[in-house]
Length: 255
Length: 102
Image (cartoon, rainbow over all chains, first blue to last red; front, top):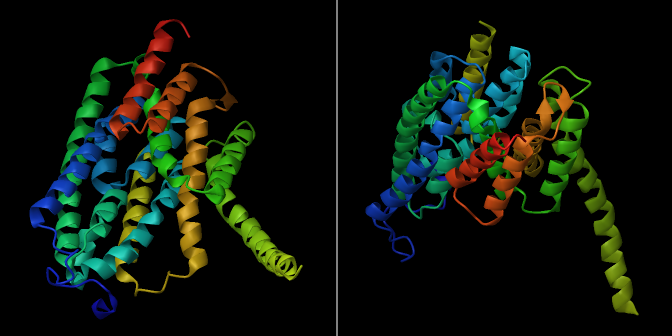
């Protein structure tokens, strides 16, 4: 399987691949530290949502994928059924499987190590690892980002939860706005083209429109259907339009 | 107790999908439609969650201090502010509006 990858194993000859280990470590630490610190926002939000210190820390230790964690505590705070809340968090985590696919080829890990590495397969480690030109760089980037982020995210979760318990009414401090701001910050870079924006707009409409009529947690799951719906619609349009546009161009050229 | 059930299910589910990606043979999930759907699913979920946590009060929709806070976060994002600053902008503006009685 490893032979299929285009990545050179050795610090390579093509010139562009000559990135010193120290530079990879620096990149990895930058991302790991910046994002690791935002565990503080999670700790505060989770404790403010009514979860205990142990529950908050268990989420960061065991789930360790930020968007899912925020989604779960948000859904529980809104009075959602535990399984509905977990379903929303789970669907948000599904993207990590696709990161794993890419990383698996690039890291070429022995099978025994994969269950250990799996917990670190998230947005940030993938972003840093994929940016490295050599397998050695990919491995260093993945490990340093993963380790820094895991340690810091859990430490700051603990501190945030302790802090929230100490200040009591987190809403008075505006901390209930941290959750939606985190989601917005995660969402913004994904809104690259029309399809993404259409999906987002439809999901907002479904999520807000169904909120008063469906049980807590369920509207978000229904809103997830915006993804296949828009994909299906744009597939149909692309199929039809591709045909029409092709013919249109040919006709114009013929004139 | 039900919170622990939710945590347990989420932890097992999220770990399972991470491991799945590392274990399945390359190519098994590489169909373009599947990849596209996997990329769009978080967009839909994050958009719905952002909207709900900004405007929902229980099952009612309201405009309150949070709206101003999240708007501030949006401005910070447009100005390409770093992640923590975006979150801080939302928190500070929300607290400020609330302090002024909003």
